[in-house]
Length: 279
Ligand SMILES: NC(=O)c1ccc[n+]([C@@H]2O[C@H](COP(=O)([O-])OP(=O)(O)OC[C@H]3O[C@@H](n4cnc5c(N)ncnc54)[C@H](OP(=O)(O)O)[C@@H]3O)[C@@H](O)[C@H]2O)c1
Image (cartoon, rainbow, N blue to C red):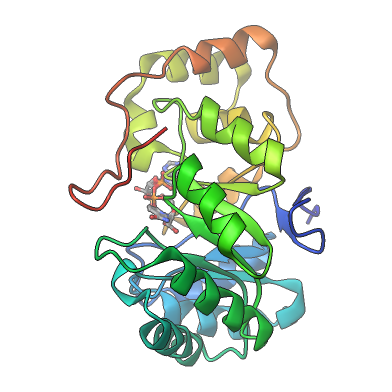
């Protein structure tokens, strides 16, 4: 097994992340899948209080036999629980389901829709880090303005911004912002939740390169730098395939052909009333 190359954060210089991670939304009873992914070489597992996977993620880590400190786990606090006490309770519930003493990354899952002051949430997030319940912290689904405000208000440094990214979504501004401020960009729905597999342009590029569509879509992301996609799969062959993206490069024309797939309505996770004004 080859080690996956890593990203580094400069906003929180002690934070590192493998350039590919493993997504688990919609996975339940997933201990075997997680253990298998770890055996193949995945070292970052993404879960959330909201997902049915926290218990299975913890079990899978123990089942894999790989030392806890060699695996990174992300979990997230849901937007309903961003008040001080709710936040602390959510973190404890996540650790209880995972049966872990700490997570490596603790994120706010979505911005508040209830007017909860961001300063209160950032204090709660920082406290979890200071208590040793999270080694590093970050946000998900925040736009640039909200992330800037979060970084200003948070007493501890943020390391990660997690947001949607795939060939149909233009994230130029958010990616440039993350590079500028030193946040590692974790890309969710990196396969467009399966939409990439019906794409004739990707199919032709994949055929020409002798790679799968998934490998092409993931390679396009990691090759841009400072991006760590977290594809989800319950299929063992797919799990193995998605890891094999570090032994080839796309040329400029191939990168441009994938960038050209971006479209105005390409966003998948866009809950009405919950989404911020996207960049
Ligand atoms: N922070 C947030 O708000 C947020 C929102 C959405 C997602 N996420 C995170 O991001 C992760 C990934 O996003 P996602 O699960 O929505 O979608 P995704 O990873 O873009 O797509 C998952 C789909 O792709 C298929 N697939 C995966 N690898 C494949 C391969 N190599 N070949 C063919 N098919 C493949 C899977 O089917 P099979 O099982 O059949 O392989 C599944 O149907 C989530 O699991 C979650 O951890 C976070």
